[in-house]
Image 1 (cartoon, rainbow over the protein chains, first blue to last red):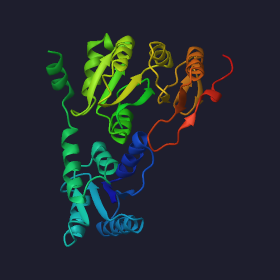
Image 2 (image 1 turned 90 degrees about the vertical axis):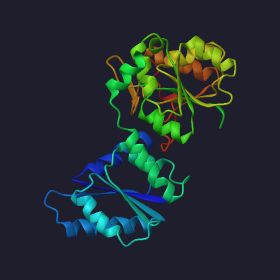
Image 3 (image 1 turned 120 degrees about the vertical axis):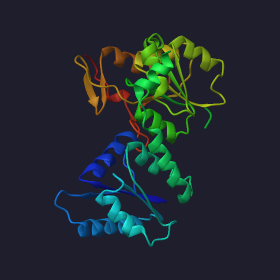
Image 4 (image 1 turned 30 degrees about the vertical axis):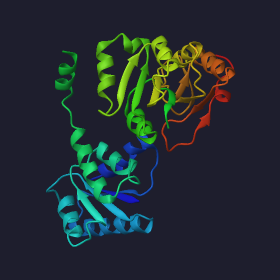
Length: 140
Length: 162
């Protein structure tokens, strides 16, 4: 199964996991690492590796790292860590939101890892909707 | 699984727990919002229809329409979730000849005049009457908010009187 690792500026990742709990209940192989306001990038790299290895120790065959913002410290550090890794072992996606985390965990046993990754990207893109524009179009 | 895969009382009707939590878990491809109130409110109806992904068909129907569609076998080739807002609507559905077998109690949120019997479930006197009547008709009434939680039978938790 795929493990999911959220890496975010502050506690966003932990809170996203709490939000997943409201919708699905508690799920295994889902962890978060926070970059605290005074955190160093070396500490962040160590924390990511620690959580990554913990997921693997718990049975994750693949790890999907979800970070909050492309170009931010979390994505820069995680990007460096995965650079020389087998793409079938680990992937990194930026711009994490709740539908992406849900997509990453709900049907993860149904898809090969290389197919799960684009599904998570698509779930994130499709979740962004200008409600007024869509509603007005529907009611007209 | 085919046919009606879940009957659920949920005062929020179409929302994340239902669409993503239960919908994905049960591989549902249809959601029936069984509510006279929503069926008569175009705005609420559109919001419900928009709340589900494109591959999940949302129907908003009155209680009697829902019963007629179920009895006619309209969902036999689908995997449908039927949502009602209240135990009273579930009982009306049963009264129209729908044999639901099991009834999931999701959110029945607290409002003044209700008594909380467990997390996310509060009841008033009418809810108690309807839930007991459903149980008496052989429906297994159980509380389970999300798929990963344990189902809990509910009727014995209802207060004896108000």
